[in-house]
Length: 325
Image (cartoon, rainbow, N blue to C red; front, side, top):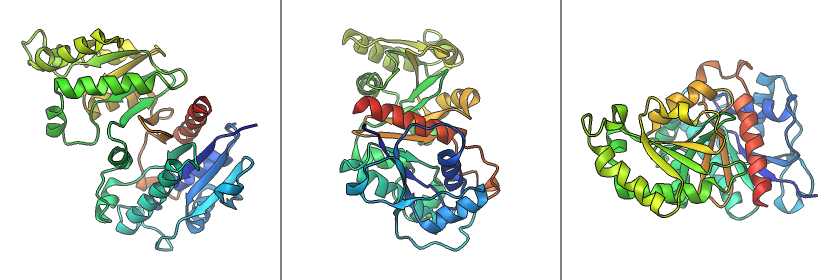
């Protein structure tokens, strides 16, 4: 019997990531059988276990000797304070990046089928001198064309651009950019089990420009890209008014909404699926998922953070891994 090998990076040591990982892996939710490999340190695991009230037993991980499901730890040497501060901190930022980068390296060499990432602090990465804004930007540096998308039982959303200042994001709404994005989205999203086959593209302006009365990006950039994609066989339509497109995609498993910048897509998605949503990076040779929330420094260490989104991220990683094998 085969089983997926899923690496789980513990995220920022001062945030809720380590504790929601442990609660997800040791709770009552029935997760698929897998080899779950934690990327972090035993000290971070022990601190999170104390906060969560769980006592996981994780064996030292050896890729060559992982022959059965279970919980394992890949010890990543980092320097951390005994009590990592619950705020953006350079030491925490360096540690969380090294946990993540180590998991990605193992996936790239074929030792893992999937990587699930607990939340990191972009501010902490900057303080640590990490040159990438977040997980997806690092993955894009290795795999240009990687796409940030979000999946829940009721709604799927893909982002043309993600962690950019709004002015820079709007500058990317160009025919060539959107057409290339739709090509990659059509190629990768449909490969996932239950993946969408139809893509609904949002307009940029109110009422999708109202035939040019409220902006001309729809006529000059967005419509031509959609028409070109359709001529090549993709099931793409739009542009639809941004204030109604998500209602059109809701409860339609075969459909995915395409948002043109981060908040256009994420406000709607998190309103509907904050507890159940999963961040999925498309366009990689391995599976990568993440909960759709952040570090929540304000409640870290209290044992009150919900592990629901992490559970869903792990389930989706296992499902996608099984379909790819």
